[in-house]
Image 1 (tube, rainbow, N blue to C red):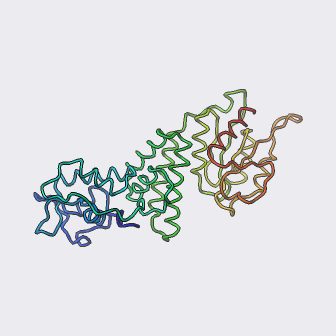
Image 2: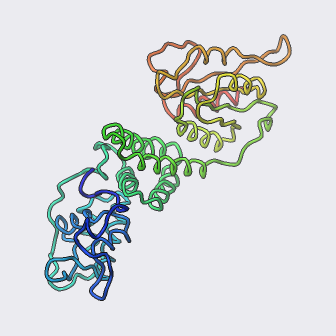
Image 3: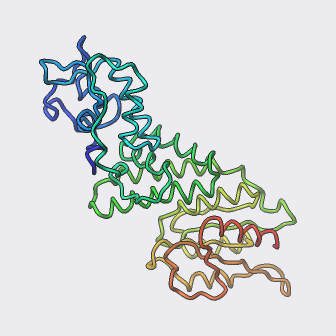
Length: 338
């Protein structure tokens, strides 16, 4: 993790920082201010050293003491970096947002890192991804929720999912995989808020027989598969197109899946598999062959395979959508022709 994010502040103590955490007339200590802002003390020191975002007064000439004007500048800095503004630009804007005290340095040092919260996002991502990554690493739940909601409102559900949520989730996953058990809390917090944003974007449920008795679209992760966020995005998108769904979520047992197909008579079934170890073509073919109705007029569902687990496995008659937009178009067409 880069210095600009630091470690979680829950373990910070006066012994860790070498400074008292008490507040008095001379201003807040670095430790106390770090807890107030939800960042690490090392982040505040780094911003002071790199960008000149420091206190106007230092106790005994050495220890940092942050007064209300200093705190206001830092609050602006946190808000801008959470929105995806690079730290150097955010520092300049934060300094300009308040009248600088006499003697304050005119500028900061050049930005040394382009990393977003220490996550491997790569260069070709939307600015919102970088702000979302920084907020997630800081465990800033209000900022994460606000940015996800804004992304859906600004770009629409499909683009927000494919261009903001997915790249950031992938970056967190790569950081987790390369760091042992570290950053698990970041992945959990981000996933929970992505799920919440997707549910907020989901329109009220549509009755399965609202248009001529056609069955719903059934969404399920295959047995042993826990990654359900892509299906939640698909469920939200279908709801916005007035296509009724039944969302079963992660790790649906094969027997339960077959029973649900027979009871509901869905026009389509989407089976999600994140890994090859969970992707079972035998199960997919079994679902596709499940029929219902009277003899001579029996029907069976269209079965779509979702997720990277199905890659490289020929499955004639079982289409694999290339993304959320493709899946929405395909399923809307199947439902309309049902």
